[in-house]
Image (cartoon, rainbow, N blue to C red; front, side, top):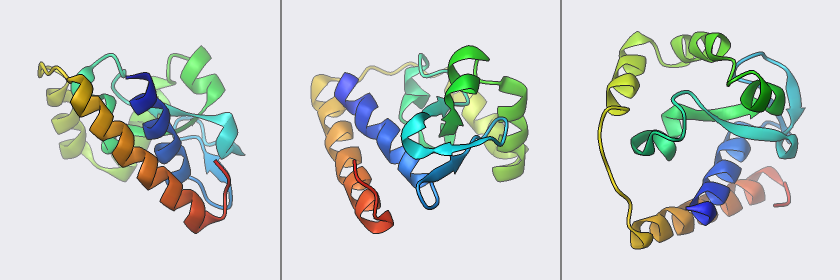
Length: 127
């Protein structure tokens, strides 16, 4: 799980960066991609959404770690980016029950490692 989380987080933060900088999805603050977190709209404790790309976006560390994800700001971001229908689907998915095997977690880690490395290369950033 730790390795899958690491590579997924790197991928999300790289995906959301422009010129090595991200804009926090919750408050709009700009920070370097390495100094940001992978914020989850629905808490990552909900396993069905832990590795869902639409549920995760680059977020400043303050919002993610100290402001409980700045839920109000994150919700506004999700409304603008995806709309209410997509938010409803994400909210419904949190009620699903899944288990991920070590094999499945390995596939997630390998997939997002490759995606993160490719994005870093495309954007001229070092991992």
